[in-house]
Amino acid sequence: MDSEEFRRHGHAFVDWMADYLAGVEDYPVMSQVKPGEISAQLAPSAPEEGEPMERIFADFQAQIMPGITHWQHPSFFAYFPANSSPPSVLAEMLTATVAPQCMLWQTSPAATEMETRVLDWLRQMIGLPEGFDGVIQDSASSACLCALLTARERATEWRGNEDGLSGLAPLCVYVSEQVHSSADKDVMVAGLGREYLRKIPVDDNFAMQPQALEAAITADIAAGRTPCCVIATIGSTGVGAIDPLASIGDICRRHGIYLHVDAAWAGSALVLEEWRWMIDGVAAADSFAFNPHKWLFTNFDCCAHFVRSADDLVRTLDILPAYLKTEEGDKVIDYRNWGVPLGRRFRALKLWFVLRSYGVGEIRRRIADHIEMAGEAAQWVEEEADFEILAPLSLALFNFRYHPVGIDDETELDRLNEELLRRLNASGDLYLTQNVVRGVYAIRFMVGQTYTQPHHVSAAWQAIQDTARSL
Ligand SMILES: *Cc1c(COP(=O)(O)O)cnc(C)c1O
Image (cartoon, rainbow, N blue to C red; front, top):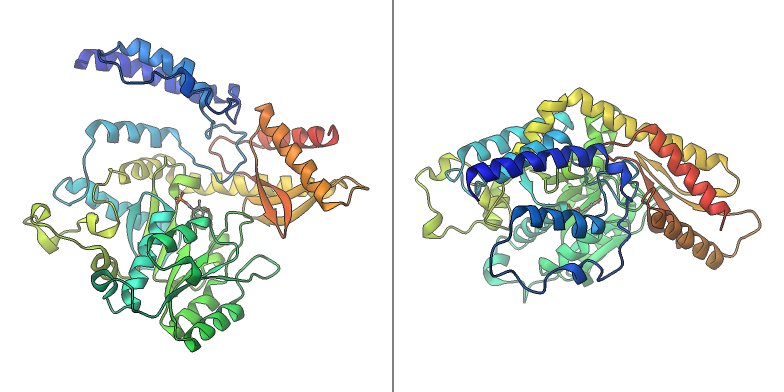
C-alpha cells in the first residue's frame, strides 16, 4: 500500500469511525451471535495473494461487526466500563502510526518523559500524596502481580528471585472475600500458592474486617509462616466495597507487611474531593493502582500504577543484558524495569490527549453525573415493591433483583432473575451482568459509559420493569 492509498483509506476509515460513534445506539449492545457463527465465516488459512483493502473492510463490516459487543454503547451497564473517547481514539491513531517501542528512555525519550509527567498529573488529580512514582501497566492484574513480586522479594530479603521459594516458610497474602479474581491468579503466577491466600471476612458493607485481618496474620506468624502482602480493595468488582485503608495500613506497618491498593475502577472517582475519604490512610501503602481504561475515558490498555519505592520495584524486576545497555545509564528512567514485559506501547499519549482535551473539570463533572444517575436508578428500584436492592449503591454501582410479592423460594427467585437478565441482554437494548450477593443471584447495575445520559438510564429501568413483570 503506497502512501496515497493509505491516505485515501485512512480518510474513509475516519468517516466510518465518526459514523460508528454517532450511531452506536443502533447496534444491539451485547453481540447477538451464537458460538462458532463468526469463525464459520473466516477463511481457514491466510491468503497467498494480498487482497484489496475494499474487500477486507467490507468483510470487517459484514462478518466482524455482528460479533462485536458494543462497550461504547450508552446503554452499557455491565461489568465496569472500558471507555474510549474521541480524544483518546485520535491519540491511539497517532500511537499506532508512529509505533515506537518504549522500553528504554533512548528508544523514545518523549514517551518516557511524558509517562512520568502525565502520571504525576494523575497523582495530583486523585489526591495521592507526593512520594508516589507512577508507571503505566497494561492492566490492574499486572500491577498487582508486580506488587506481589516486590512483596515476595522483600519478605525473602531479596533471595526469592535467586534461590526460588522452596525450603522457605510459606509466604501469606491477605485479601477480602470480595477481592477481584486477578489476586488469585497473581498469587498463582508469583509462585506463592493459593493455599496461602487468606480471604478475610467482610462486614455488613462488604469491607474487610481489620480485626479478622490481624487475627489471620497473628495465626500465620504463630504457625511459622511469613505474612508477605495485603491487597486492599477500593471499589470491589461485585458490589463496590471499600476496605478500611487506615486500619489496614496500621496493621501492615506494625507487622512490616507490603500493602497494595487495588482501586481499578473506583480510583477514577477520586478526582472528586467528596470521595477522597476512600483513600484516607493511603500514605501507608506501598503501591496503588487504578485503571484510566475503565472510567477515565482512555482506551484500553492503561493502568496507572504508583509505587512508594521505585527502587524496590526495579530491584525486583531488573535484568540487564548487554544488548539493552544505553549510555544514559542511571541518569534516565528505563520503564522496562518497572513491569513484566520488556516491550511497551506509547500509552501515555492517549492520557495526555484525554486530560488536555477534557480538562480535569469536565472529567469531574462527567464522573459526578454517572454517580448521580446510578443513585437515581437505585432510588427507583428501592421504590418498587417487587424489586429489592441486594447491595446498596457504592459510587455508581448497585446490585438488585426482581422479587415479586408472594414468591420467596430462593431457587425460584434465582431462576427468575437469571431469566430476566437473559431476556434483557437478548433484547440488545441494554447490557447488564450478574453477581452472587450473600449466596443469592443478583443483577449488577453500573453507570459509567462515556456516552450514557439520564434518558438511557430511565429507558433501562423501564425495560427491566416491563421484562420482569412479563416473566
Ligand atoms: C477490573 C478490575 C481488576 C482487573 O483489571 P484488569 O486491568 O483487567 O486486570 C482488578 N481489580 C478490580 C477491583 C477490578 O474492578
